[in-house]
Image (cartoon, rainbow, N blue to C red; front, side, top):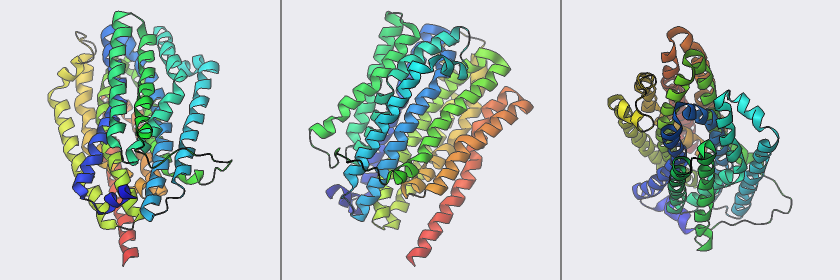
Length: 446
């Protein structure tokens, strides 16, 4: 209960940054292993390697999506119950979340055994990229259970008062991945297979580090026998579905962008988008870190019926996201060539396309962070319907509609304009839902 009392009565700014910085660090870790692959694959295997990697990235989104489904879903329910003082069922919530994560990981691993070639073709692999994508996806699917359990456990460890351990697990795992990428691809010449193997080791390292939270007995949650009971799973799933939609739809969006770009400019366009998508992954991870960092603070104070405190937390999250969004846009607008140089050099066919794409695509960051924070706020209060609406619009409906319409009118620039317009439109809807829910809460308090 000491951790809960600190959330409710402690210095809010200190608590905000105590969770914010490790949360951002942890989410950066989840993106850095993809970024590390892209950098080294681009340098070691060229544009074909980048195209094959971008075809494979949606699977990473699926892993993260299910990890967030059970991690955010379970930890939100856990935090709200703690705020209410109802702590008798929190171990069951944790156990169910981890068990569901492991079971889903096993199911995804079976895809590697029975449907690998079909999956590669569905994602757009053909010619040389088919074999490179097959190597990458085959290894990743073998590590499915580790990816899912690592993401789910990381969220619970952070919410259980150890955000620094959660951050360390992701960052150290990512550093190991980058080192192994270099060794396997550049030194040993193992190609895409080696890059995937390095990526697969990352969540294994993360799980080992997360176990410190339990070995040193810093935990107030633990696994317990369920005795056949799977009650309240619906609550867990409802809380986590918006995060699952956003993350898994990101994979669908990458797939859709790849298909449109293949029709407009072939593998050059896909390679350019691979660079832009990976740069965007970093910004998105930081924004998601802000959203996840405020989640336990909001949920606990919502459960404790302390609206002034959780609304102040939202305001700090919005302000932080706005500043970060402006910074990211300025970096992309002023230094696109330098950003491209991280991944590939001396390619006159790809650099001009990517430069234009970065300057347009990065406009989305001006609104993206605010949208993520507002969604996290609504989700943290277990307002599943409103959170689901925003997630579907932002992650699926608007972006798929625009990416299939805009290129018909303005060519490849229509692909780059898709995400900025999606984020701007979503922002208006997010503020409407945010203000509506806030008015309902204030009315109930009168």
